Amino acid sequence: MSPRVVPGGVTGTWEVSTPGGPARVHLRAAPHGQPRATLVLGHGAGGGVQAQDLVAIADALPADGIEVALVEQPWRVAGRRVAGAPATLDAAWVAVLADLRSRGIGRRRLVVGGRSAGARVACRTVGTVGPDALLLLAFPVRALRPPVGRPAETRLPELLDAARLVPTVVVQGERDRMGAPDEVAVALSEAAVTARVVPIPAADHAFRVPARAPLSQADALDVVVRAARATALRIISGQY
Picture 1 (cartoon, rainbow, N blue to C red):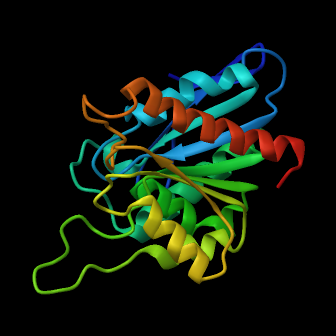
Picture 2: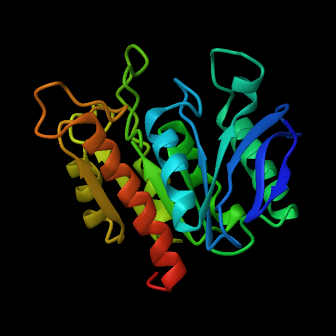
Picture 3: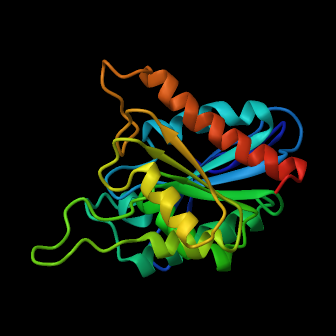
């Protein structure tokens, strides 16, 4: 589907040529008037833009005047099961952001981020893309299964470097085996870097919660949506 103009902006799905092959954008426009902000999110290495947290954000935020673009990396568009190299992912992300801006999307009040590997891409490219803020969902502090015979390598420098440049919000499940909220908060504190960490009680890396958790699955996703909304609204109001 090509992008189409509707009252309130552009919506639809379209492909973007990138150095790694075609990427795909799924844009949910704000329903009334011009959007007050744009949120662009990438997916993780184990799934696509159908992840429950990405869908929840895309469903909820347009009503607040915040358009949401979900970006499929070229490896997903091509139907491959394994993500591309970091440099390929980063180049595709930068190309998609350039395409959005060429269409008048995200030229001002721009929040970027993503879940897991998508959060890493947003961090690594923050200096090139130049967003107003970062929204990182389930940032993977370390690999779930490090290479045999090698210690688990931390990805925290990517997060810390990015958070030094722009306001950053990190949403982490308390049962995330790839990095719990406390780990992120301690690393930020030790590095004297300011960022907001939002924990989701009992949630794992996919923000799933067990049946006997202190909150329901809907409640867990509501935490994510509220964090995303608050990040965009702070940009809109000039609080960042």
